[in-house]
Image (cartoon, rainbow, N blue to C red; front, side, top):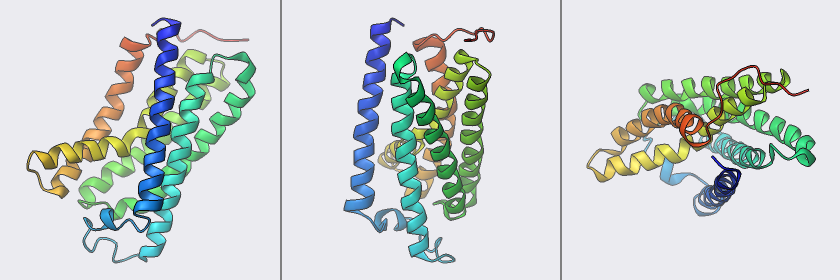
Amino acid sequence: MSKIARKRLYVGLMCFSTLYLLYIVYFNFIYDPQASVFLGHKGDQVHEVRQSLWIAVLHGHILFACLALLSGAYNFFTKQKQAYRMIHRWNGYLYFISVFLVSLSSGYMAPYSTGGRVNSIVFNLINIIWPLFTLIAVIMIRRKQVIDHQRWMIRSYSFCFTNSIIHLLTFISTMLGGSYTLSYTVGVYGALIMNLLIPELVIRYIIHLPRQRNKRVS
């Protein structure tokens, strides 16, 4: 991919992430701050926990997910600019902390997932895979393995779109006649598969990162 095409891709990613972030903030903090639409599909699944506590955790989950989405997009845009190296590094730590806190809060909410245990298992699996991929990316850059760092960051960043993929697939499935619970399950499993598959396609066929693992910087 040429530098111009790659720059356009990064700018597009930054614009999409910003617009999606604004939508998330509007919907969850202004339009429906009590998550009544989302809770309406859960029935009595949140009966064992104080709803106010669950909503507080949800809001924290959303805020840190937004931070991960935005900080990750920003670092993809600035990673090759020498003047931004220090900002890139500290922004990367912000991304790492945000991913950890998103996964931690998701782990709290997972037992109350729409669809029950069959979906909570997948959410818990994502809560392991996402921080693991992010940790590997950190280890790679500390070893000065820049290309491998970039590859693992692409794999990690794809999980920032888990929620959007779930809702997209849920919408499509319900339009095809599926019940909401079944459609949500399709969305959850589909999101996991897509989050693992899409970054590999991006790495191999769009940005063409080399396979060599011995490229280091001094």
